[in-house]
Length: 191
Image 1 (cartoon, rainbow, N blue to C red):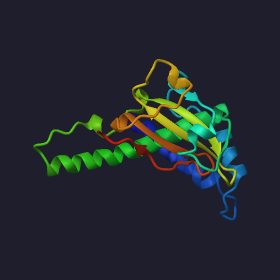
Image 2: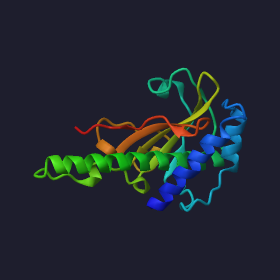
Image 3: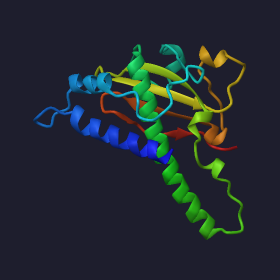
């Protein structure tokens, strides 16, 4: 798994450094889309499991508190694969940071029992909801909502899952398809 994460980080870094800039160093929308279109789908990860994700259309009324001044967009199959790869990279980076933090906490407070599962995200255990949109500059992004405990059977395929608290069982991020990166990782707090 660590080898896969390392490969993903390397591929994404190479794509981000070469595919998003023209010869003068300016970002280009065309090159970013070309990178997505040519992104290899055989990087050692299992194929996408459609039972683990759904694409939900942007809805102004529902999404106005989290996505303002945007317009709904659709996703190609390659953009979904690319979103998943970038999510894996983002979560791998988060987990590395959390393991370092956990180790320091264990050294500082040896009498307190701390479970790694409370700190890291085991992404294969999560379902994902993808909401694609264009921002005010016309850049395509994907809000990715992840959760490990789906509510109400298959309703998660049609309705955005929103909960208070829940810890690292619930988190979300925005994947920037133009810049090829995650824009932060927002993890629910614990009650």
